[in-house]
Length: 94
Image 1 (cartoon, rainbow, N blue to C red):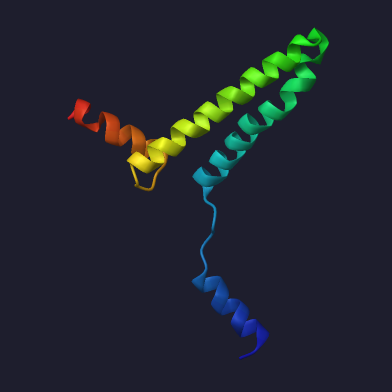
Image 2 (cartoon, rainbow, N blue to C red):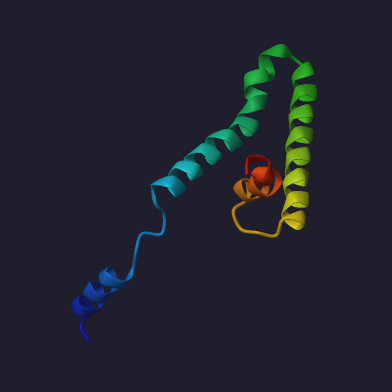
């Protein structure tokens, strides 16, 4: 099999790994995540109190990660926050 035949065969077999929804989620996640790392420079003009604000933000991020970790143990389904919300609120709507 030549390289061109292999390339044509692979084009027909493979599908895009990331769709529009996944790319959008990736960008949103990166923008939110970068906010935590850019926070110290934004708060630097307030002086030493900015270190306290950064520590509070870090504790909030750890609390959020802990909550999602516990939810992942309680609801072992794929889907992340959607699966957790569906499990918790689905009976309320129907």
